[in-house]
Length: 365
Image (cartoon, rainbow, N blue to C red):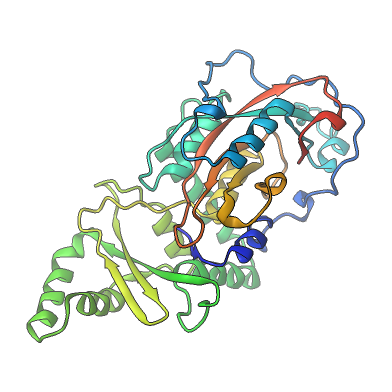
């Protein structure tokens, strides 16, 4: 679900950067310098024979502060200019296949609420991609499955050095060293995976410790840490990210929460409804699977201590391969960063438009 942040200045700095660059990223997909364009050609990039996608005006979106709402309305009115990496245009005639995407201006609208059940990354992505013929028939569970499959394929071909770095990034997110990190985090979480078929045996082991006089949470922490699978490397990340909160899942997610003083709580997830929240690794794998960029649009409130002109950030997640389609956009409300989390994704509907000069757009991506 991500780290809970408390320092507002740290938050403002942290969320202006893109997702962590994993070592398997294709150097060719690195972003070029911001383009200096005088005009944008008329480009038809969207399948015109698609089902109409419903959207919500920013005036009607709940949970936004005034400065967030005004900035998002400005983005919708003026649009954002997206231009694919230069390499794509230079290789336009290499194989005689379909032409790569070209520059386009998007007006962004809110795509509606999605359930906060842990599957929001995949539910929101499915809705954000629903204007694409290739994505219309794919549901959120299939998106999760394909994301994990893509990760395992790429992880399996990584070098030893790359594997070590990726495993380190996973440990940092899900099995952190609790001796560190308290200058930034109020609460740190450790994720463990319990096989559904082992839950009765785990409960029995916890009960034995209770009979010896140990407190419930301490006993649960001890047994789960001893017998459950930590999420600390690529294979365990794949098992974790496969969990959708369904009875068909192989594992249940156990979450241990800590403060600097020690154990805060144990979420035993006894009903098995907890799903793995999509993280930056999952977003990059999703981008790679569909060969298109994904932009997470974060709109920060007054608690982030940023002015109105800088309250919206576009965080790019680029595929580790050639970009073959236009990007799609996800929205994250940034109200209440201080100790409140906010890792909930919602879809954005991108309306393409043409014949707009770069001077008139609200932002160049």
